[in-house]
Length: 134
Image (cartoon, rainbow, N blue to C red; front, side, top):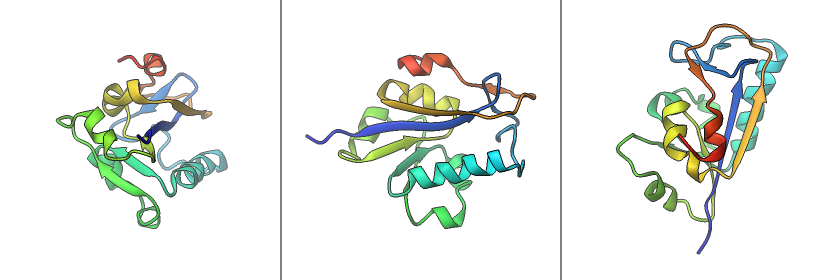
């Protein structure tokens, strides 16, 4: 049986910041380091599956919709059953804390970029995800 490779790519601030008011705390920052991070995300997820909540999937720009498979996940969906649909593929889990709480135990690779942001946030990276715990 083919194995599904489950990965997460995310960016955090200097203190582990992930979100603010439903978006990224640094949303709209056009500094090169932030733009490079976004470009890297879309480059590395190209050709693969991106599972995320509806808001994250809706935020994927038009140019990135044709070269990766986008799948909306809901809290009612069983993560193991959902991942089984993608045997032999690389699946990136996006969408932040609620989705990572559900999928952390399946993630084999966490790709975390620490950005120079050190401002306010209302969502934080949970180091227990790295251990497959929520």
